[in-house]
Length: 330
Image 1 (cartoon, rainbow, N blue to C red):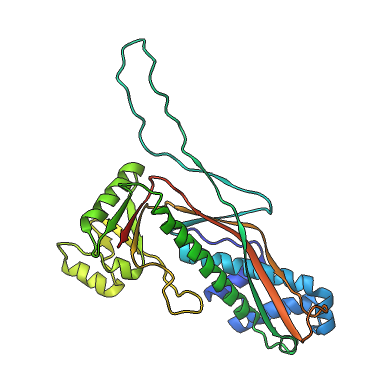
Image 2: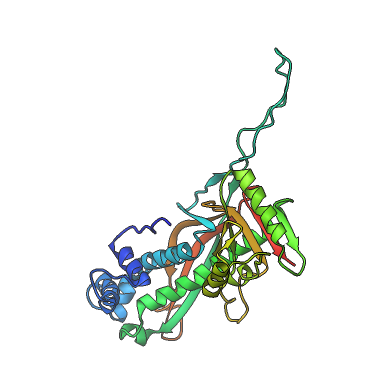
């Protein structure tokens, strides 16, 4: 897996805090550095008036740390399934969908060139974006007295946004089931079908010329069975919750989560996705910069609470092609 990239020292420090690998400082010292960066942005003293005068600078610091927190969290959870791109505000990316199928070769008489033309490239995919946002608040006195853990606050918002984006990634894939045609989709009635999965793997590998792998939740991968199971496979299942390999094809777990505010699982336990190794079948676009703003101590509220609006422009779409297969357990 490629390394997640950051733009500056503040983002690198934020990434170190996220991964628990702070190099130059202790974790407490690193949290202090983020807090001190906010104080410095307010001229070295953090009170009601310096915050009001300099909150644009505070928002810029929060936006930078939130951007890396959301980006890293998405990258860690979904990089096996999705490809991530950032574009400038107002820009778009057109993705070329490669057609890996072979050309039809004709038998013809010498001197006869009257045969069908075949398109060299596949189709294109353009991903539109929309705003996702979170609004949180705290008592102004708690913020001014230094009782807000900025790193914890940012990570909680980042986890919430990454969850929402992850839900859109999975919905894009599940939605593709109705568009993908046989033999690149199959419905298994009630129980797992080894033959259906083996057939899907064979078609994906034949279409792309690459080794396939199978993605699914831990629960769904645990339902994969085979007629012959070795002691080594049994030991692997005891360790991982699944066999790790199905007839030579690697099994990889998709992260599970709860729907926000409930104990219901966010990711369906009824799908298997067969993809070529290294293929990202979902495109995720972030457009422009992370947005942090407020409507608080400038007179728009009649209480003494500080309110943060944090948003991202996000687009998610799944490629519709013969490069992957979807199996659904009905």
